[in-house]
Image 1 (cartoon, rainbow, N blue to C red):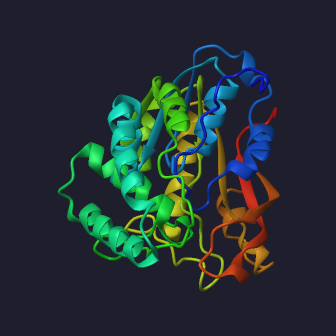
Image 2: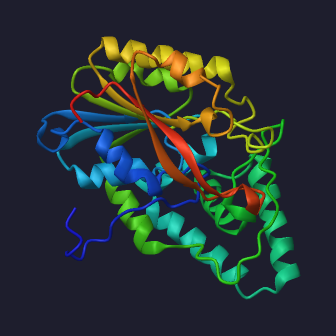
Length: 303
Protein backbone atom coordinates (compact mmCIF):
# COMPACT_ATOMS: atom_id res chain seq x y z
CA UNK A 1 0.00 0.00 0.00
CA UNK A 2 1.02 3.63 -0.40
CA UNK A 3 3.27 4.49 2.53
CA UNK A 4 2.95 8.20 1.84
CA UNK A 5 -0.41 8.46 3.59
CA UNK A 6 -0.87 8.83 7.33
CA UNK A 7 -2.65 5.53 7.93
CA UNK A 8 -0.90 3.38 10.52
CA UNK A 9 -0.11 0.00 8.96
CA UNK A 10 -1.09 -2.93 11.15
CA UNK A 11 1.74 -5.31 11.99
CA UNK A 12 2.00 -8.36 14.27
CA UNK A 13 1.15 -7.53 17.87
CA UNK A 14 3.37 -10.33 19.21
CA UNK A 15 6.78 -11.76 18.44
CA UNK A 16 6.36 -15.25 17.01
CA UNK A 17 8.83 -18.02 16.26
CA UNK A 18 8.93 -18.42 12.49
CA UNK A 19 7.23 -15.08 11.89
CA UNK A 20 7.22 -14.21 8.20
CA UNK A 21 7.84 -10.44 8.18
CA UNK A 22 11.24 -10.94 6.54
CA UNK A 23 9.78 -13.29 3.88
CA UNK A 24 6.87 -11.15 2.72
CA UNK A 25 8.54 -10.37 -0.61
CA UNK A 26 9.04 -14.08 -1.30
CA UNK A 27 5.41 -14.74 -0.41
CA UNK A 28 4.35 -11.94 -2.77
CA UNK A 29 6.35 -13.49 -5.61
CA UNK A 30 4.59 -16.81 -5.04
CA UNK A 31 1.07 -15.39 -5.24
CA UNK A 32 -0.92 -15.32 -8.50
CA UNK A 33 0.15 -12.32 -10.56
CA UNK A 34 -3.44 -11.07 -10.89
CA UNK A 35 -4.32 -11.21 -7.21
CA UNK A 36 -4.81 -7.42 -7.04
CA UNK A 37 -7.54 -7.47 -9.68
CA UNK A 38 -9.48 -10.60 -8.76
CA UNK A 39 -12.98 -10.22 -7.38
CA UNK A 40 -14.77 -12.06 -4.55
CA UNK A 41 -11.51 -13.42 -3.11
CA UNK A 42 -11.32 -15.26 0.20
CA UNK A 43 -7.98 -15.51 2.00
CA UNK A 44 -7.44 -18.39 4.45
CA UNK A 45 -4.54 -18.86 6.86
CA UNK A 46 -4.91 -22.10 8.86
CA UNK A 47 -1.78 -21.54 11.04
CA UNK A 48 -1.96 -17.79 11.63
CA UNK A 49 0.63 -17.47 14.40
CA UNK A 50 1.78 -13.86 14.66
CA UNK A 51 -0.15 -12.94 11.51
CA UNK A 52 2.63 -11.17 9.57
CA UNK A 53 1.39 -12.45 6.21
CA UNK A 54 -2.28 -11.96 7.08
CA UNK A 55 -1.87 -8.34 8.17
CA UNK A 56 0.28 -7.57 5.14
CA UNK A 57 -1.88 -9.25 2.51
CA UNK A 58 -5.18 -7.78 3.73
CA UNK A 59 -3.71 -4.27 3.59
CA UNK A 60 -1.82 -4.78 0.33
CA UNK A 61 -4.84 -6.27 -1.47
CA UNK A 62 -8.03 -4.56 -0.24
CA UNK A 63 -9.98 -6.39 -2.96
CA UNK A 64 -9.91 -9.48 -0.72
CA UNK A 65 -13.51 -9.56 0.50
CA UNK A 66 -13.31 -12.17 3.23
CA UNK A 67 -10.54 -13.66 5.32
CA UNK A 68 -10.37 -16.64 7.66
CA UNK A 69 -7.65 -17.26 10.22
CA UNK A 70 -7.19 -20.29 12.42
CA UNK A 71 -4.73 -21.57 14.99
CA UNK A 72 -4.72 -24.39 17.52
CA UNK A 73 -3.36 -22.07 20.23
CA UNK A 74 -6.45 -21.09 22.21
CA UNK A 75 -4.83 -18.15 24.02
CA UNK A 76 -3.51 -16.70 20.78
CA UNK A 77 -6.93 -16.94 19.14
CA UNK A 78 -8.55 -15.44 22.23
CA UNK A 79 -6.19 -12.48 21.80
CA UNK A 80 -7.11 -12.03 18.13
CA UNK A 81 -10.80 -12.05 19.04
CA UNK A 82 -10.34 -9.53 21.84
CA UNK A 83 -8.37 -7.20 19.55
CA UNK A 84 -11.16 -7.45 16.98
CA UNK A 85 -14.09 -7.02 19.37
CA UNK A 86 -12.84 -5.31 22.57
CA UNK A 87 -9.67 -3.45 21.72
CA UNK A 88 -10.34 -0.50 24.06
CA UNK A 89 -10.73 -2.74 27.08
CA UNK A 90 -7.57 -4.60 26.10
CA UNK A 91 -5.64 -1.33 25.79
CA UNK A 92 -6.83 -0.29 29.26
CA UNK A 93 -5.69 -3.61 30.77
CA UNK A 94 -2.30 -3.46 29.02
CA UNK A 95 -1.77 0.16 30.05
CA UNK A 96 -2.27 -0.79 33.71
CA UNK A 97 0.18 -3.69 33.41
CA UNK A 98 2.71 -1.45 31.68
CA UNK A 99 2.39 1.24 34.34
CA UNK A 100 2.79 -1.35 37.09
CA UNK A 101 5.73 -3.18 35.51
CA UNK A 102 8.06 -0.54 34.07
CA UNK A 103 8.93 1.29 37.34
CA UNK A 104 10.06 -1.96 39.02
CA UNK A 105 13.68 -3.00 39.49
CA UNK A 106 15.04 -6.21 37.95
CA UNK A 107 14.10 -8.54 40.79
CA UNK A 108 10.67 -6.98 41.21
CA UNK A 109 10.04 -7.30 37.47
CA UNK A 110 10.92 -10.98 37.56
CA UNK A 111 8.57 -11.60 40.50
CA UNK A 112 5.79 -9.66 38.76
CA UNK A 113 6.35 -11.65 35.56
CA UNK A 114 6.24 -15.00 37.39
CA UNK A 115 3.00 -14.02 39.14
CA UNK A 116 1.41 -13.04 35.82
CA UNK A 117 2.65 -16.26 34.20
CA UNK A 118 1.05 -18.30 36.97
CA UNK A 119 -2.20 -16.36 36.55
CA UNK A 120 -2.09 -16.96 32.78
CA UNK A 121 -1.58 -20.70 33.31
CA UNK A 122 -4.35 -20.92 35.91
CA UNK A 123 -7.07 -20.73 33.27
CA UNK A 124 -9.11 -18.49 35.58
CA UNK A 125 -8.71 -15.22 33.65
CA UNK A 126 -11.50 -13.89 31.45
CA UNK A 127 -10.89 -13.19 27.78
CA UNK A 128 -9.72 -9.58 28.25
CA UNK A 129 -7.24 -10.52 30.99
CA UNK A 130 -6.05 -13.57 29.04
CA UNK A 131 -5.30 -11.42 25.99
CA UNK A 132 -3.52 -8.79 28.10
CA UNK A 133 -1.44 -11.44 29.84
CA UNK A 134 -0.65 -13.12 26.52
CA UNK A 135 0.76 -9.88 25.07
CA UNK A 136 2.55 -8.91 28.31
CA UNK A 137 4.27 -12.29 28.62
CA UNK A 138 5.24 -12.23 24.94
CA UNK A 139 6.77 -8.77 25.25
CA UNK A 140 8.71 -9.54 28.45
CA UNK A 141 9.63 -13.24 28.24
CA UNK A 142 13.01 -14.59 27.14
CA UNK A 143 13.56 -14.06 23.41
CA UNK A 144 9.86 -13.57 22.66
CA UNK A 145 9.29 -17.32 22.60
CA UNK A 146 5.99 -19.13 22.98
CA UNK A 147 6.62 -22.56 24.43
CA UNK A 148 4.48 -24.89 26.51
CA UNK A 149 5.31 -27.95 28.60
CA UNK A 150 3.63 -31.35 28.46
CA UNK A 151 0.75 -30.00 30.54
CA UNK A 152 0.16 -27.21 28.04
CA UNK A 153 1.48 -24.56 30.44
CA UNK A 154 3.47 -21.58 29.19
CA UNK A 155 6.93 -22.02 30.71
CA UNK A 156 9.26 -19.44 29.11
CA UNK A 157 11.41 -17.61 31.70
CA UNK A 158 11.53 -13.87 32.23
CA UNK A 159 13.54 -11.80 29.75
CA UNK A 160 15.60 -8.72 30.50
CA UNK A 161 14.44 -5.75 28.46
CA UNK A 162 15.13 -2.22 29.64
CA UNK A 163 11.96 -0.61 28.29
CA UNK A 164 9.63 -3.12 26.61
CA UNK A 165 6.63 -1.65 24.79
CA UNK A 166 3.85 -3.60 26.41
CA UNK A 167 0.93 -1.50 25.13
CA UNK A 168 1.27 -0.36 21.51
CA UNK A 169 -2.02 1.50 21.28
CA UNK A 170 -1.70 2.67 17.67
CA UNK A 171 -0.87 -0.79 16.35
CA UNK A 172 -3.64 -2.46 18.36
CA UNK A 173 -6.15 -0.03 16.83
CA UNK A 174 -4.75 -0.74 13.36
CA UNK A 175 -4.91 -4.51 13.93
CA UNK A 176 -8.49 -4.21 15.15
CA UNK A 177 -9.46 -2.37 11.96
CA UNK A 178 -7.92 -5.07 9.73
CA UNK A 179 -9.58 -7.87 11.72
CA UNK A 180 -13.08 -6.49 11.12
CA UNK A 181 -13.45 -8.56 7.95
CA UNK A 182 -11.70 -11.62 9.36
CA UNK A 183 -13.45 -14.76 10.58
CA UNK A 184 -11.46 -16.17 13.50
CA UNK A 185 -11.40 -19.92 14.18
CA UNK A 186 -9.61 -22.07 16.75
CA UNK A 187 -8.74 -25.70 16.18
CA UNK A 188 -7.23 -28.12 13.69
CA UNK A 189 -6.16 -26.70 10.34
CA UNK A 190 -8.39 -29.16 8.46
CA UNK A 191 -11.54 -27.33 9.53
CA UNK A 192 -10.66 -24.57 7.06
CA UNK A 193 -11.29 -27.00 4.20
CA UNK A 194 -14.90 -25.86 4.01
CA UNK A 195 -13.72 -22.55 2.53
CA UNK A 196 -11.95 -24.21 -0.40
CA UNK A 197 -13.05 -23.15 -3.87
CA UNK A 198 -11.82 -21.42 -7.03
CA UNK A 199 -11.93 -17.95 -5.39
CA UNK A 200 -9.92 -18.94 -2.31
CA UNK A 201 -6.21 -18.50 -1.63
CA UNK A 202 -4.55 -20.31 1.27
CA UNK A 203 -1.26 -19.51 2.97
CA UNK A 204 0.19 -22.23 5.22
CA UNK A 205 2.87 -21.57 7.82
CA UNK A 206 2.76 -24.76 9.91
CA UNK A 207 5.14 -25.65 12.72
CA UNK A 208 8.34 -26.37 10.83
CA UNK A 209 9.87 -29.82 10.53
CA UNK A 210 12.92 -29.86 12.84
CA UNK A 211 16.11 -30.17 10.80
CA UNK A 212 18.58 -30.60 13.69
CA UNK A 213 18.50 -32.36 17.03
CA UNK A 214 18.05 -29.08 18.90
CA UNK A 215 15.71 -27.20 16.59
CA UNK A 216 12.51 -28.63 18.08
CA UNK A 217 12.93 -27.07 21.53
CA UNK A 218 9.92 -24.86 20.90
CA UNK A 219 6.51 -26.53 21.02
CA UNK A 220 3.60 -24.47 19.71
CA UNK A 221 1.14 -26.79 21.43
CA UNK A 222 1.44 -29.80 23.68
CA UNK A 223 0.46 -32.08 20.79
CA UNK A 224 3.39 -31.19 18.52
CA UNK A 225 3.51 -31.48 14.73
CA UNK A 226 5.41 -34.54 13.52
CA UNK A 227 6.05 -36.04 10.07
CA UNK A 228 2.62 -37.68 10.04
CA UNK A 229 1.07 -34.22 10.53
CA UNK A 230 3.24 -32.81 7.72
CA UNK A 231 1.92 -35.56 5.43
CA UNK A 232 -1.66 -34.86 6.56
CA UNK A 233 -1.08 -31.22 5.60
CA UNK A 234 0.17 -32.37 2.17
CA UNK A 235 -3.02 -34.39 1.77
CA UNK A 236 -5.01 -31.27 2.69
CA UNK A 237 -3.14 -29.31 0.00
CA UNK A 238 -4.13 -32.02 -2.48
CA UNK A 239 -7.75 -31.71 -1.32
CA UNK A 240 -8.02 -27.94 -1.71
CA UNK A 241 -6.20 -28.12 -5.05
CA UNK A 242 -8.92 -30.45 -6.31
CA UNK A 243 -11.38 -27.73 -5.23
CA UNK A 244 -9.43 -25.26 -7.46
CA UNK A 245 -8.03 -23.26 -4.54
CA UNK A 246 -4.56 -21.79 -4.82
CA UNK A 247 -2.06 -22.14 -1.99
CA UNK A 248 1.40 -21.14 -0.85
CA UNK A 249 3.12 -22.98 2.00
CA UNK A 250 6.33 -22.32 3.90
CA UNK A 251 8.50 -24.87 5.69
CA UNK A 252 12.04 -25.64 6.74
CA UNK A 253 14.51 -27.06 4.23
CA UNK A 254 16.05 -30.29 5.57
CA UNK A 255 18.64 -30.09 2.78
CA UNK A 256 20.12 -27.13 4.64
CA UNK A 257 21.61 -29.69 7.05
CA UNK A 258 21.52 -32.92 5.04
CA UNK A 259 21.70 -32.63 1.22
CA UNK A 260 20.38 -36.20 0.95
CA UNK A 261 17.17 -35.45 2.88
CA UNK A 262 14.27 -35.44 0.40
CA UNK A 263 11.25 -35.45 2.72
CA UNK A 264 9.49 -32.40 1.31
CA UNK A 265 10.82 -32.86 -2.22
CA UNK A 266 9.19 -36.29 -2.18
CA UNK A 267 5.82 -35.58 -0.58
CA UNK A 268 5.28 -32.35 -2.56
CA UNK A 269 6.83 -33.60 -5.81
CA UNK A 270 3.73 -32.68 -7.83
CA UNK A 271 3.78 -29.06 -6.64
CA UNK A 272 6.19 -26.17 -7.22
CA UNK A 273 9.04 -26.01 -4.69
CA UNK A 274 11.33 -22.98 -4.37
CA UNK A 275 14.21 -22.51 -1.95
CA UNK A 276 14.63 -19.05 -0.46
CA UNK A 277 17.03 -17.52 2.04
CA UNK A 278 15.65 -16.50 5.43
CA UNK A 279 17.12 -15.26 8.70
CA UNK A 280 16.45 -17.37 11.79
CA UNK A 281 15.76 -14.57 14.25
CA UNK A 282 14.60 -16.38 17.39
CA UNK A 283 16.65 -19.21 18.85
CA UNK A 284 17.56 -20.21 22.40
CA UNK A 285 21.22 -20.22 21.36
CA UNK A 286 22.69 -17.20 19.57
CA UNK A 287 24.85 -19.53 17.47
CA UNK A 288 21.64 -20.98 16.04
CA UNK A 289 20.64 -17.68 14.46
CA UNK A 290 21.59 -16.66 10.95
CA UNK A 291 20.62 -17.25 7.34
CA UNK A 292 18.99 -20.55 6.46
CA UNK A 293 17.23 -22.00 3.45
CA UNK A 294 13.44 -22.30 3.62
CA UNK A 295 10.92 -23.82 1.25
CA UNK A 296 8.08 -22.07 -0.56
CA UNK A 297 5.67 -24.72 -1.88
CA UNK A 298 2.70 -23.84 -4.06
CA UNK A 299 0.31 -24.83 -6.83
CA UNK A 300 0.45 -21.35 -8.36
CA UNK A 301 1.76 -21.69 -11.90
CA UNK A 302 1.31 -18.11 -13.12
CA UNK A 303 3.07 -16.18 -10.32
